[in-house]
Image 1 (cartoon, one colour):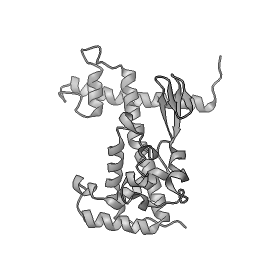
Image 2 (spheres, one colour):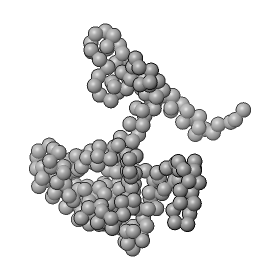
Image 3 (cartoon, one colour):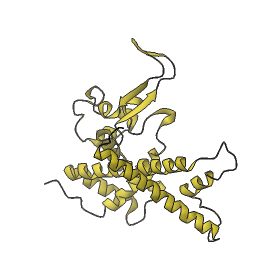
Image 4 (cartoon, one colour):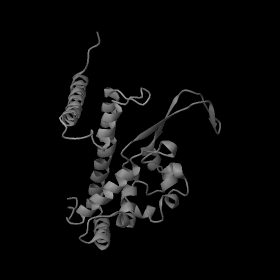
Length: 242
């Protein structure tokens, strides 16, 4: 019998509580549909997942555990990454008050007292530079993993098949050979002319959301959510570091 550490026991309990909470929400939707209060489980992400557990086509049907895993993944990837990004934005803007002022001026100029819209969000150049620099310095995910399908060769290095390659995003983003000697400094102006210019057209040098066909599906969601939140930042003064 293997003994579990206190942390492992607590983690197991937490997983069970999360599962119970999700099942409780699903059960409420099932009751609403059964009682005729709603015609379907809903058109949102949760509703679609519940529908998929009842799919008549076995090949398209998912299990309850698969549904729970999808919900946990969406919460973790869709919420924690954004809060991590915004947290570092607040810290770095408190330290670099001149960028705090520039961010506030841009938001007020584009939106004023209006609610953010897609057209205005697309014109937030200063905010976009700040977000990219925060993602460079403190990426929400520290590594990406790729499994080698067949033998490959990179320069003189031979990579055998069926092994996992771990790419350190943090090390890549802090490589002075790519970003310069001021690599550890907060300098949003690096991205003034876009990511391509900042990386000397090396697409693999900036990977806050991965790269290629498996780029994180939450890329636009996370960055746009952060930009919308900046609209609220403009109404308050972020305290400087003391």
